[in-house]
Length: 310
Length: 278
Image (cartoon, rainbow over all chains, first blue to last red; front, side):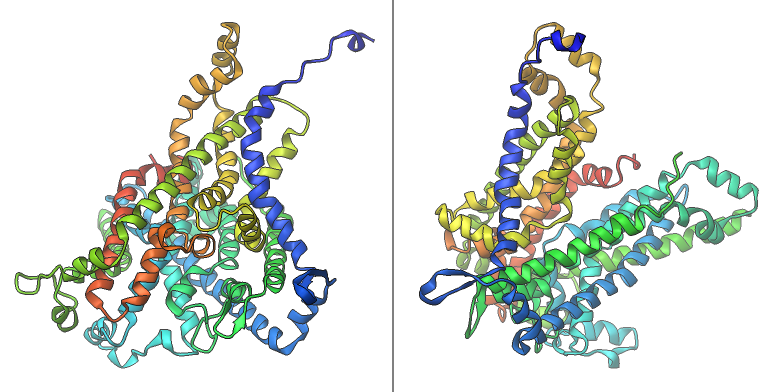
């Protein structure tokens, strides 16, 4: 056989050299700790401070023990509501603004784009505090402003009320991140070839019906990507809650989401001691929630979306 | 469509966009304006610009005297720049290897590195802290740099390998015939050619690192290693009743980010929109 006689190619060390730093750091700081955390959730602190294998008992505690399961389900449902608000408010606004922004021969488009994106680059600390101050009844900016609109009676200290705090925080987060779906959709709309739109116009499909019948179906894959990005971001959120409401996610845990629940479980707060094993258990559950969401998107949604190649 | 209807439509579009721009910018502007006013003016007339009578920089004095903001700023800079350097260098090297060479396990390696795009590194925090405690790295900036490098690499490799594939093969093969080593080819040919992509990745990597609160809070909460984000969070919590100081601290925290954004906004927007926007 001719191939048997060809000398073996020498080992190409440079490939290993190019890959090594990235793979080593990524594996050591991200992948190993991730699986380490999943593994830790199976252990507990035994007598004398040793680490003992505990099977799935931590999960049984998290789901079954009323002291834990109440807080866990509260955080999970809150997180789901947080996500729903983003899907119902942030993404439609982003799509609408992108549709307007992409209309042909619009002047100052670059200015609008740059300005509307600014909140997305600010840290949660800044955004959380800015809105905390604005919504504060002490300062009175929001009530004064609403008075001038004639709806001053509607004002309430939303961040302090149990029934409105979570929705208010979700809307603050929406305000911050609208720029991201806006940009992604905007790019998708611009990449639709002119011929397609001209053909639609020849058939008398213009304006709003052109948006619903031609453009929207073409940007569905981008909307899918935005949804999964929103999902992962929301189920991993922590900073905004911590900055505005503290680790206790007040009032009365009304704004507790999985990120803040994980932080409290892991580090403890006030009288409760932190527990790395239960913290790892919460992180593991979050991992599976995110994994489920990503898999649903990859195998359920993405494969069914029809892609158009131009 | 008649010209009249066209004008109507375009003014409608501008009205909506202007309204939303105001909604996006006004809250930030309100903070900056009021940071330069006296306490009385902040409360009596929050919506107006500072006048000669109400102009007061007492908040900034408090912040600069009480807080260690210069140190926090320096820490943030060190962490961000160092992480950025490692993400770009190691990310580009790995991207070059994946795009340039055919070897067994190439696709598998690409998928392995891409995992981290979807799974947030925060979920590994419990074990990351254990590793850092064992390595005696708690309360050091090194811990943060390591974590942020790992966090930034997946997306960097993913984006950069797309661009590395576009580097002309003829150019590289000509260099090989001239006897350049693979390392020289990477540093002198591939890297300079993907510079625009590097700028985009840099902006994407930079913003979450600069703004992160979670890892500084957990890995480096000590006074000497506080980042600007953590430092301002703690300062704001302590001075919550001193409105001048709070507004000034917020303004100081907003300022560097906005400046960076205005410098790099072109790369950022072009990056998000994959070059669709000229």
